[in-house]
Image (tube, rainbow, N blue to C red; front, side, top):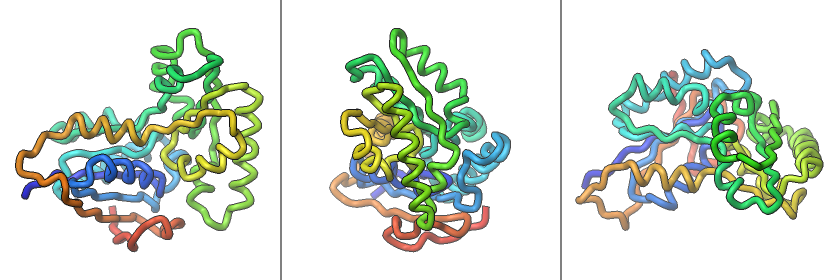
Length: 254
């Protein structure tokens, strides 16, 4: 039986939310997940460093036989996915983009909030999406330089709660009725944000990514889609949220 090897990477455990959606939608594929813990979080690095990491990880996954790759990080997507597509033209890529279009589709009062890292907030791609889909809507952009890192840091629970309080207050003041979580780490605290913002519809892109990947993968005639594929986990450094993994990831030097 021939199955497709799909690579996924993020700087931390955020991409696990994407992996969960992929396995729910396409359980028969084999998945290789890389947490670039040695360089987490990506939002704290320059664009050149982020691009270099994305290229090295993609090259590693390519050597492992991966033919499709999900860049499970908004910051990495807006920074480097166009370069990856140029350098690895034989591979299929799916990135993570802020889910602003569905947010604009469901808002009742025309006010949408976007929560992301500073790099994503300042990216030309986000501005393009807002201009493309947000005509006549009011969009509030809320950068957080620390939230992704706090989510991956179990010892920082107090600081995490304080940051969530700060974000929730900003969203309330904006009067947005839809909040876009534009970082794959953020679904880990979606429930906590929902408790603080019970009247706000909170959305994230993982299911959309799964649908997109499913649409571009070749149809394999000899794959039994009832069977579960394998999942392999890798890390490039000391991990802070080992408990989110079903088994200890293998450490690799990239």
